[in-house]
Length: 50
Image (cartoon, rainbow, N blue to C red; front, side, top):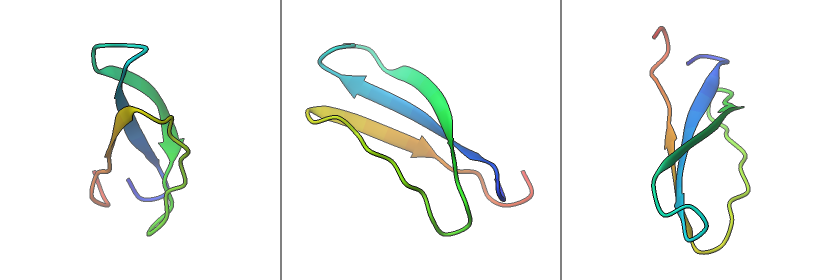
């Protein structure tokens, strides 16, 4: 997603199932995100042009 966003998915003790969160901005070569302790976070980035 050139200049688009990254999908955010998270598994944590507060939500014992995988949840999709709001997408975050993703600039080429850079993503900034703060995640909670005791969690697993997955970012889904698409190649440019999709």
